[in-house]
Length: 461
Image (cartoon, rainbow, N blue to C red; front, side, top):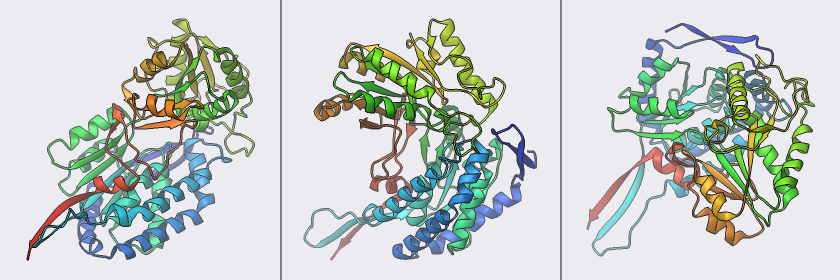
């Protein structure tokens, strides 16, 4: 493999930095250090593990300005919004720390005379976290904190677009005083990453990324009986019912579609609106979209920046152009956003109508600032269309009727159902999906389950 890799900033297409890859010897040393460190780490008290991981979270929060700058320069999110990732990181980490006692507690069946019986959770060993660039701290922390608290050693391999994130994590955990080898970082290319997945010294893999990336990880681990958590994105729908609060739905769905330039696995990618509200909804949605301040993400007045790469923007442009050829209409005029520049990562938000599920933009993950909006006659049509996808991460229902939201939610093929909100992850709830969105559970008290193995104790007096 090559010895270094370059990070191209989407802000201006320039080389932000060059970073070395770790070689085979460094990988071997990292695995050996993790194997040695986890022997004592698992026997460190839960109280002490929580304390040290909590200090690492404190260290990350203290680096808020550096974290925000790293996010903006590496992926192009506006500097006015990047600090919000630190707030989310802290919320998730603190929640998982608070849930650790419950998540790792012994499970005791009903008493049986003459016996003591219980189930105890034990760490797996070495957990490999393969983290993406789009929410580089949030996605990684989902596994890092509970894995460490449960007594595992962790190796973080971050996206090659965001190496500074891995370095900031490493710096914070070292400053917090974790024993050497308990938390480590590797920078690897794809081939070396898959070799690491297949290593007999890795006991669990948590991957967040594309469906094809998930398949590659699964194939690499196929010869071994280890757990794999796969969070692979979505094509998340929203349904605006006849009884919805229209202004609230418009405001939240515009943000849900375009925040982070639409580069969110749980971002809104398709919207179904009751025919009664369709015209008013579309008009309001377009008006609010046109109000975005689109441009250089280092400008504090910008609230919509470029996509992560010019190639990613080109992919979405292709979806839009194809949909138009198939009969869709664009509602954001060319030139409305001066920063829009074909050939670069700057892609202006676009709203499409006259769309259908025969168009890729309504069936294939876009992961960019484009949304298709369709009119529906009611609940039955909406549910059928929402479920007409190979993905199943989240879905949102906009309604004044909570019972209806639950009733419809029970029929939705997704891991999370929202009512009157979207594009949010509550760390007290399980983050999971169905179909091509992947498998496994992170966060919530259940998040400790896949990062531990159960041992049964059957003790006769």
